[in-house]
Length: 285
Image 1 (cartoon, rainbow, N blue to C red):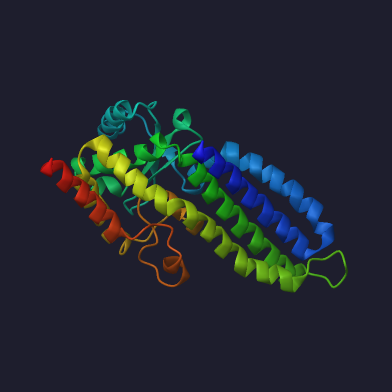
Image 2: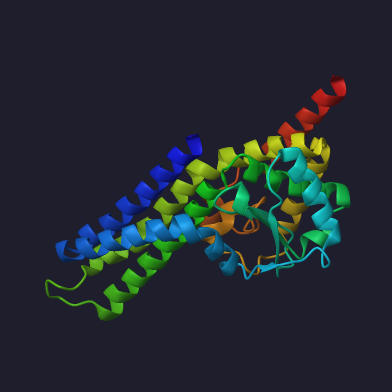
């Protein structure tokens, strides 16, 4: 119920921002942006997962291609009491992973090519448990819609900026160039703030759930440290800032400026500290 409320609120934010675009550009734009908001609401709900997978050029992989991953995911899915998710591969050397889908029945786990190169099987199991934690906690719809919302807002703001600079007119039917440029600056920040309000808490929860599913908090902690270090030296190939919040570690960890300032992930030090504390408590018990 909580995630359903978040989804409704998130779609409401999308509508408000888009209709705000129209009102700032001129009254004649409001009706068009209201229709656009309704279309994007439906699209974000039903197709946001497919859009995210396409953005990252993810391809489904069969059990024959990745028997190791299938065996781990199948075992963890039974533990989590969720259907076996589909598994996708992302053509990127940066080690990373994310989960998406409307609900557990439509769950997807996507891993990059690079993650198989640096993690031990124990660490990989911890990462996959984290991603199944997202599916079990039913926060994949909210996070995927948030990514789609951020991408749509960024795309529209860039389009309006281009129109204002190169195609604007001084008549009443044209967009206000000052308003369009202002929106191009403010809108991506607003979209990122929406993601910040969602993704940080869900990462902590998925870490905890994943550690419980795998029964090995230390393995996930070790994997997170490796992935975070590698993200500082191996640039992402397919990641986009709008979808960064979906990944288990921020694919832009090595960047500076606004991208790092508005990180959609909680501090890695704190994530690892909590997992190590869980491990200590298990051994103490």
